[in-house]
Image (cartoon, rainbow over all chains, first blue to last red; front, side, top):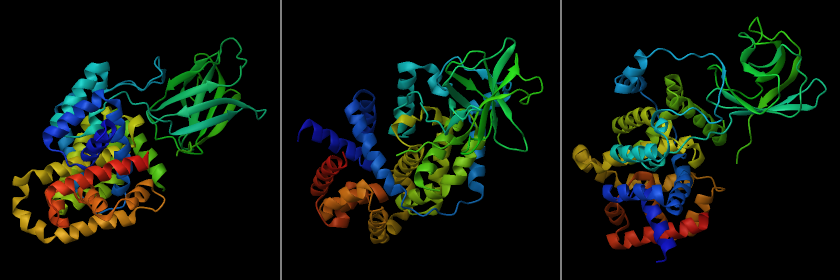
Length: 252
Length: 183
């Protein structure tokens, strides 16, 4: 057997669940270091997952979610989290373009990676867990915003973590004492909700908005001109610079 | 809703779970628990054990969502992997299942039928189906019995009435051919 065949055979045993506990630990350890082996495992796993989708869903007992909830509530980190003060939900400009890191990721780099990997082995959870790295999610929706002249003026990408990446496509004239404010309308009953302000200069920026329901296709987004430091009423008051409706990105 | 948008929605929900949003975990559970119980039951046979596997898995998801890497596979695949591994661990943990051994033997035939049914249910356009279709029957069957119903080498050997060493070779050769076909 060539090295390549050896690797594929081993990836196969791993994905099929045919390894002993020690073999699996060793495989998960190797996946951290051996990119070719890791890719072989992930590719095979993704294809085999199609077999998992051939089942018809079965009835879920009423009390099952209750049991999950109770176990989660009794986890040590949950009790700590629930006594901690609530974090402010005020919109703010995220300094870092990456989503906020939580849990093991807050340890960062190789340290977090190694700890995640050893936890995965301890919990026998498996390879995706062992392959912890920073999540780099896809946007939930993408929006092309048009100017009143019907030319594309900006592109938004809205993410599940309530952040929005804004790419202006043209320069906007913002008079002194005014600012550009970003809005979305996810529910007509609620009205437009501010996602934050982006100042007077059009540059690429990522806003961390308030916690809202997941962005949906056809959801309205717009930028208006407002007095600094932002609309005095909490709703749009000035002229619309650009507006557009969300689309779901096509995925293969 | 098609599989792609289901995948996207699960991924979006999991990102929220990673941020400590328990309501999103509940939504994920509401959407996926029924399917995951079915996946676990193909391996464990019993509904109560399958439900236990899914319960354990969701607690694990809550604790570990921050380690999910969106670039390396869909959230649904990740979720299913956690459930499968939990179910396989329960199955291999002989002590817990001793009392159902007779039952397991009795259902041997039914289990291999499950594996064949899963293969038959794959859409024809799936690369996995096409590539599995190119393998000879004993290799294909061995691979399906391992993945779909969680058979060990020994159980596959018993089902196919072949020596364990032969079954191991079938699976290794089969998985190499399969991955070459899929790449």
